[in-house]
Length: 373
Length: 88
Image (cartoon, rainbow over all chains, first blue to last red; front, top):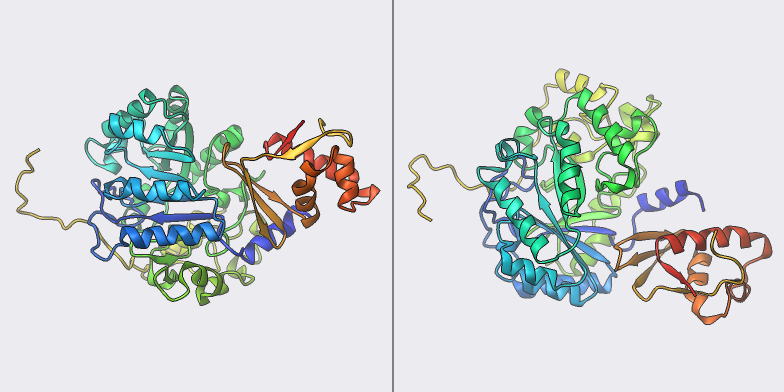
């Protein structure tokens, strides 16, 4: 069987997701300006411990091999260890993303004692100024302290997870060196205009020249740098990057939000891409297999405005979420189309981009009292 | 190529297989690698490796025709690189 027909099978969807992201809470100690889920405050409707464990039991029966846990800051949940232990005990590996604030010495040792656990520390600059401009004051030092604690606890190769912006593209080599210094693995992903990122994307996303730099850098590093296959829109530049060249939304990936709502991917937290809830009759399984949204995402897509472009097979029209939240038609070019078709459309567009449906950002208080710590 | 018809192989105990329409997904809990087994016959062979003394005997038992053996050896060789199967 050729690779092409494997990809076409994947496009028609699998019986269970390969890669499932589960955001455990909207609560977060940080307020990153590009947060995909507009996190900040806990939502009172978030899944209970028992509900979360029932979801894990269902994922075990579906033979989901691992889950990507995020948030918010997932370690804020008091039942965080309870939930991830239940997952690992049921042969579902856990990869979780954290800003590191709760990885003190004791938690680092606790994490190091667990099997089937991967940790991704988020970092968006190799110096405090670059990182903290996006992730907030003190967040660079927090992340480095967490890495030190993991190293001291002999956790092994954790991951450093970077969202590439126009301000840190030039630091890719430095990120790699930092990861190497900890024996860690570097993961870089694409900035999406989702959540609070919908407001900041225009100022943060890499320039056209920088996109070429990212492509060349990734080609040079091959499979040693993880990307979550998020840069496939760059494949139109030439030789394909490693990974599956397709949008997996609703086909091989999906997202469960803290309330149990199931979305097509982590970058489309919007009613239009909500397929159902794990609390619906039939649970997650029924949503994955039968929801009208996922069924439609598994039908052959139209290349639309990209049909006459010779690069369509290479880039697949790019990222659905990036198009959606910049107000571009879904069957047209990605806003970061390397041939510039997206930029042309964006500058000519008078359409209003959709707003993220849920917002858990902390309110801005003009009369906030000083915080005592 | 490290795998021959005389090799003795088995599926790693750290690997789980999930049936899929195209064959199966193989996930190695140790190295976290996810591998696509792109044909049901490959899945049958991989599952049966430990039941036979050699790869050749497994291919025979699974009814793999002689002209397909070279491609199966290549596929199995790739699976040793990702540690999905072990030699010996």
